[in-house]
Length: 386
Ligand SMILES: Cc1cc2nc3c(=O)[nH]c(=O)nc-3n(C[C@H](O)[C@H](O)[C@H](O)COP(=O)(O)OP(=O)(O)OC[C@H]3O[C@@H](n4cnc5c(N)ncnc54)[C@H](O)[C@@H]3O)c2cc1C
Image 1 (tube, protein in one colour):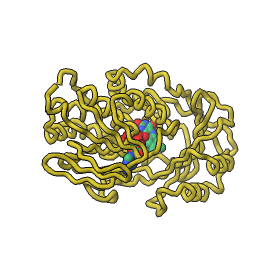
Image 2 (cartoon, rainbow, N blue to C red; image 1 turned 90 degrees about the vertical axis):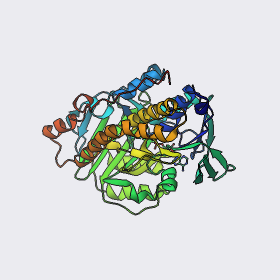
Image 3 (tube, rainbow, N blue to C red; image 1 turned 90 degrees about the horizontal axis):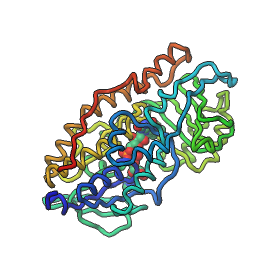
Image 4 (cartoon, helix red, strand yellow; image 1 turned 135 degrees about the vertical axis):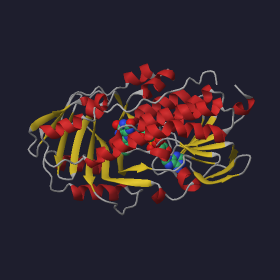
């Protein structure tokens, strides 16, 4: 380990998947990172995310593969239902659960537990400005006193503030995929066992899946729409938008809308991608969704976040604090992998709302199962000697 690397101070904005994974690998290379996370505390539960391919290798190298396997949602095939609740087809679990599926909150908690003693965590705060010079970045925060860091990493997701401050407004980089999604927690009132039910109508879909060993469930509404005007921080407004769209639908939709209105854990956003000409600007670099979100329809976002973190930390260690060379090497390795996933994300969005669900359409969906969508493998260098 080189002195320069060890002396680096790194601020990571965002403590979900990419941020803690980077903190883990920086520590392995001798650097203690600071994570600033806007949420006041860790969020439990959330929607399910899956891992594919080499992301499992990264978890293995982190010594976390066994732990993450223990959190597997262990989904069986799910059923498609019509407006009367009749099951007319089966959707293979591999299509929606990848190689391994966990609740995002469980993943975040596991990464937090693996890094809490070797990382400075600051919850309930956010960067407000970034001023970089030849020696570092002066960072101001909403609450904490200003501090200087050698490097700043934006791992703060699709609506990254780091990206906005260092690269420009969101509209320049975020491409809407034409789908909105709402997800919320509810009781497993249908008494489903490790499975889900999916309902589709033109331009709309609703579903419910079990969670946490069938003790809970997650339901989702998806609908097609071009850019909608709404306040991103107003869940009541989001719920109204969803309720209007699904007002006349059958199956369990009326009950699910009532459950949604009562839900405390509620997520609503556009499905979107982030397209950047470059992932870094001087001493500031983007990681995960903030820099190259491929969209939920790609099913690759957590994999990208984990692999990106591994490569970024490894390249910083390899180049002994020469951040410009390290950032370039990180981007060069990641970009083709991201491009493939972004193409998958766009294709997934195009076929998301299918006119009349037939076996032919289900076969099309099955094309999204891991064995059918293996993308070019990404090489994970061995950085243990860096
Ligand atoms: C509905 C849905 C389903 C998905 N399903 C899958 C799937 O099946 N498989 C898959 O691989 N991926 C899936 N994804 C994508 C996956 O969730 C993301 O790609 C992944 O979480 C990216 O991790 P990240 O750490 O880069 O960003 P995020 O998980 O978005 O985390 C960003 C973090 O930054 C914090 N933050 C935001 N702003 C600030 C700020 N100003 N200051 C400090 N902190 C801030 C946030 O609170 C959050 O903790 C899905 C996404 C959605 C929306």
